Length: 492
Ligand SMILES: Cc1cc2nc3c(=O)[nH]c(=O)nc-3n(C[C@H](O)[C@H](O)[C@H](O)COP(=O)(O)OP(=O)(O)OC[C@H]3O[C@@H](n4cnc5c(N)ncnc54)[C@H](O)[C@@H]3O)c2cc1C
Ligand SMILES: CC(C)CC(=O)C(=O)O
Image (cartoon, rainbow, N blue to C red; front, side):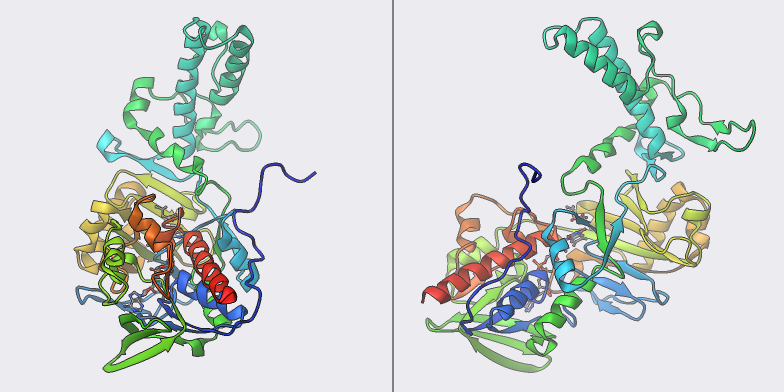
């Protein structure tokens, strides 16, 4: 039998049929722009991509040793990472159902598991008074245990009789006993802690029972520590394990797309400065260094971030400009910290996954690859909104110092002493991007306007999808734009 009620969200064998051979100028060489060129190219269109940055990929950005980036404030960083070490400054993970996986397969980009959740990673809530971190496994044992105890007591005392039949009660109590590892009725359904909490020293040979962490803190203290606030992250349909990443860095995807498109079709350092719909064709002006140039094509697919496209002079109408300008933009930042040893694996037994904190660094990511290697790269902060802006206002050295000072609270001295080099990326201060992602106003006239072509100009980007902040959104938005362009050409 076929698995019921499941259909891949996007056909993995997407192909435009017919070979009309019209020309298309594509603004922006991020995932959406590259995908538009790739799919149109397969169908015989003559495409040219104009990309303002010195490389393709847009927000899909992997930093390696020798890479140089200058931000809007004129701060230049030259990454000093060792050979083989890379830092995904933008996207880092892919859910199995995302069409991103289909492109990896089609383009021959190998993928490996990205560990998005790890029982051995830490939780650290400084504002709740925690003075040391607690392992995920311990936090889960205690929160699930006490919640189960409370619900079992309420159920058994009849507090839920209006909602539950006698059979429901029996089944719920059986579930809670196993879910929370709580005692039975004779023990008052009490949660007293089990080996699920983990060990200070794990069991060994002969009579060595190890050193179990023992009794849990009081119920009130567990709730006060607020460790449960992170558990729901892994319930999300977009963040649940298994997650994946391309082997060797997320930019393997745009690199493979660019190769398939043909690098001769991609103009780099080409900043679009104007778009004019001439009725029978589209004229695009751009700047390449000191050179002003112009390109005319039958159609245009514009994939610039909407707030930047809104600033490009055009003749597509004021409603288009207003709609483009109406996308609130979020800030986000990340720092990559290269260490000379993989102390998180050897000393703390953390092999991938994420430590969650209420510090301004938010999340710490450990590498999901290269286990037991000599060196490794930890993402020392991945934050958004006000926390991201707090870091993006600092110099790279200040960012590193702030991130390390926070991380030491969780990981101890090696967080500083083993550090070799770092690179930090502030998306709100990145030229030609100026933000991490947007919050589209779905259902508004403005949003819907941009789903339609403005004359011969089509729009695409993750901002025209319901998967903003995911490459999936950029892929499907590009497919949608080129499908409607192609339909029009074939009908014409
Ligand atoms: C910190 C962060 C984490 C993320 N995490 C994930 C993740 O884990 N998984 C995932 O799948 N996605 C993730 N994403 C989202 C993903 O990066 C985006 O959804 C996707 O890359 C967007 O592609 P795009 O082509 O729509 O836009 P962009 O990548 O923004 O492409 C737009 C392009 O237009 C170019 N441009 C701008 N102005 C001009 C101009 N005047 N002329 C010419 N070109 C111009 C830009 O340089 C850029 O290349 C993350 C993003 C960020 C920032
Ligand atoms: C905030 C997230 C949705 C951004 C993202 O795609 C990710 O980090 O997984």
